[in-house]
Amino acid sequence: MTNTQILAACRSNWEYRGIDDASVREMLDELSAHLEDAQTAGRSGQDVVGRDVRSFAAAWARARAPLPHRALRTVSLTCFGIGCVLLLACLLRSTTKFAVTPDYLAFWISLCVATVGCELRRGRLGMRAGWVVAIATALPIAILTRVLAGGGVLFTLPLWAASALLLPGLPYAAADARARRSGHAADVSSPREG
Image (cartoon, rainbow, N blue to C red):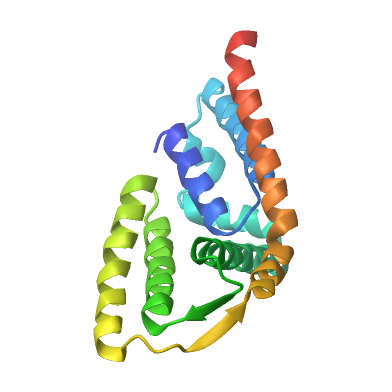
């Protein structure tokens, strides 16, 4: 396994486990330095991480961010995503109340499940292909649900519910955006420095 493959496998594992972007960047930089040192010493990348790269990455993720912290981050960002979808739906329909129907619920649940399934197979599908697969899965399920269950309203959500769902994930989303922006700026400036 090459150093690039080891880094890609670790990044995928850490992102899947809910490690924030800034920490992933730091961990990748540290691991990359260790891999380069090993290579200059005549050792392979597997001498650094062992035979099972996923176990290595999982152990480091557990040490860096314990499960309760990662679970809180994941739940908060999931609520943030749901809040964004609800807010967008209310804005597009120019309403302060959003009626949730069985097909709408089935679409979003199947889209989330398909997206997570594609993310678990990261490296084999690109992001665009993953979204295409997720939407191609979710649309037939939504149509089938509409045909079988009808278009009745399951429940109605007020606009303030979208705002309430946005709040827990807002700090995490802002921190991730800031980390991506600073990481992108570092990536852009580093070729000029070298």
